[in-house]
Each structure stands twice: as C-alpha cells, then as structure tokens.
Amino acid sequence: MGVYLFPFTSATKLHFFLGVFLHFITGADIYLHAIPGVGDIPLNKLSQSDLQQFFTEMKKGGRINNVERHGAGMADRSVRSCHAVCQMALDRAVKEGLIRVNPAIGCKLPPLREREMKILTKEEIQRFLIQAKAEGMYELFLLELTTGMRRGELLALQWSDLDFKTGRLRISRQVYSVNGRMEVNEPKTKAAVRTIILPPAMVELLVEYKSQVFSEWMFPSRVKPEQPVDPGYVRKRLQVILERARCKRVRFHDLRHTFATMSLENGMDVKTLSTIIGHVSSATTLNIYTHVTGEMQRNAARNIDQGIAGVEMQEQDETEREETVPPVQFTPYRPPHRRPGTGCISQINDHLWEGRYSPKWIDGKKHARNIYAHTREECEEKLAVLIVQMKRELAELKAAQAAGMSSRY
Image (cartoon, rainbow, N blue to C red; front, side, top):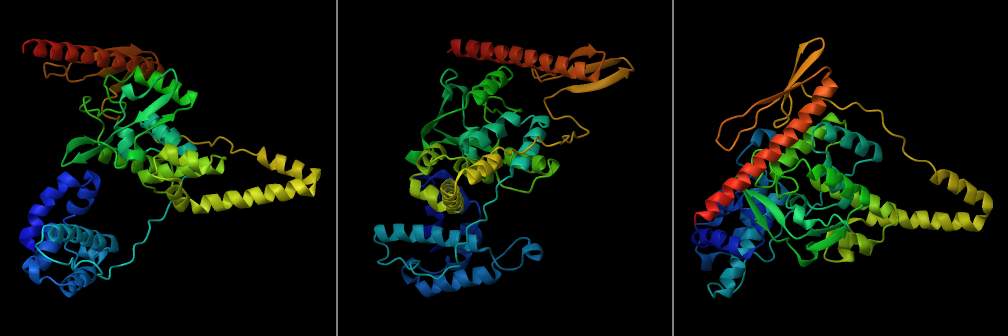
C-alpha cells in the first residue's frame, strides 16, 4: 500500500485542484499517518477492517505533535482528510485493475462538523476598518467586505481586471503560497469565474489607491512588488487588526460570510448573491445562509402583519427603520514601530520634524531621501508624497532595466 500511496501523492497534484491537494497532503496525513499505518500491507491484501482499525487508532491516539496541548487523538477533520486521500488512491487502483473493490468505501468516520459561522457586527466593522486604515490595509479589507471574494481571488486581482469607467471587476484567478512560493491558478469552479459591479465609492477609492501602487497586482507584496501579497501574511495581519480593534476573532472567510449576511439582510435576492460570491448554484447559498433567509421571512411576515394592522403600525415601523448605527468613537492603536515601507519620522526640536524614506534601489543599495516639516502631521503628509514619488521612480527604473535586458535577446 505504501509503495502505491507515495507516487499517488505526486500524480494527484496534476489531476486535482491545488487547494484540495495542499489541504490533504501538506497536512502530513500521507507521510506521517497513512504510509506508516497501513503502508506495509500489500495492496491486494488491504481490507476494510484494516483501514477501519487504522482510522479508529488515528482518532484515539494518532497525534504526533503538540500532544500536551491538544491531546493524543487527531481532529475529526484530519481523520476524514486522511481517509479521503486513501480513498482517492484506492479508487485509482481499482481503475488500473490492481484491486477489484475499494476497501476505503464504507469505513465509519467521525462526523463532519461544520465550522461555526461568525460575522462582524456593524460596530465591529467600523472599528475594524478604522484600525485597518491605520495599518495600511484599508483598501484590501474594504474591498473584501464590499464583494465577499475568497481570499485567493482577492489577492490575485490585477489592475487590468477592473474597468474604472463601468466599475466592472473580473474575477478569474486565485493565488496560493506553496512552500514560500506564490502560485496563481484558475478558480476551483466555473461559477467562480465571474464579473461583478463595484459601487462608485469603491471605484473612486481604488482610483486614489492606484496612484500609490506601482505593480500590475492590485495588492502587491511590499517586499516583492512584482508578485501578490502572501495570503499567510494577510491572515496574520487580519488577526492583529481584529485584536487591536477590539473585535472578536474571525477567519478571513468569515469576512465573506459578513458580506453575504449583510447583503441578504438588506434585501439582496439569493440568486444575485450567489452570482456575486461565485457559488455553483443558489441552493449552495441557501444552504449556507439558511439562518439569514429564515430571519428575512420572519421580517416579511411582520411587515405584512403591520401593513394589515393599519397606519399606526406602519408609522411605528417607519420610525424603527430610521434608526441607524451611530459612528463609533474609536481611536486606532498605533504601534511604537512603523510598518515596513512607510519610512521613519523623528523630532529634531520643538518646531522641526524630519521624515526619511530609504528603499532598496536597483543597484541593490538603500537610497535615502529626507523631508522636513514644522509639525508631525505635516511631516506625515510630506513623507507620504515622497514615498509615492520614490516608488514611481523605482518602478520606472525597473521597467527601463527590464526593457533593456529584453532588447539584448
């Protein structure tokens, strides 16, 4: 069995969607569990009872790392993912005529528990975006909360995907980080390839933001602008911003849930939402957001009842609808150290501030430029202008250098 599993893991990468492959394989399910557990059993001798015993032992005491923290047993999801890989490998063995029946079929597995869906409240969203702005990630997270894109889709956006005149945004790629290397692939389903319309305010914000970005990617890496920002970095920054904004801990995917929930609560129909977020069908959207559509039905019934009851109830309903969430009073946390790529500021005396930006130039050396101002606020403004100017110069130099190198061949 082990001899067959090992080459299967390499072949799988060619035939299965990259994200699924990474979820199964890089979790070490094959190398740390399946091959040691059932790898010595000949393929034609492997039985369902062998696999059942293996999965049962894996659930009870299969954990290899962090036993003190999490206990000896493996998580239900890990057991199920290991079974999925084994079943795929054995399905292939059946097709190749190596065995007649797949012994993985029918194994009793831990129940599949859906992860709890968490969404941010309106007050949390306000605090979150205020803090995101202080962290230099406002445009990224606002666009996510405006569209509900998957993380890989959002980070794979290029400026050529957006029509600034019409607000049409084409979503046709996903980005992944594989062993520290960025991989860009097609979305996992045909429905995920889609075009959405951005609100005019979002388009205007992106127009202003684009003047500060000198890369084909909408959200480039600060270290390597020629490639998109690392998804892992965005995930870590999300948790930092949430904590500093005093919001509950949520996953990036929960921002997608937040968008979908708010859209339904504000009257968007399920079919339209399904198209925007790239679900295969409206049934998928209904299944995920049943709690929201149920509340919408109750609200509709209440509105009908109030309409029948007369003008008094209608006036009361209008008063309730006028209530809005007031702006939150929140001062963002500013860390003692500035973010990389934002320069540095120092106070020379009571009436003089100095700003400095020192990016690495095309010669590999850091080139520093300074600006001076009478107040910190003025210094911040001048430094921001300086950074944009130097980034533009650097981008032009890199483009000229690349053109010169290509002309040699």
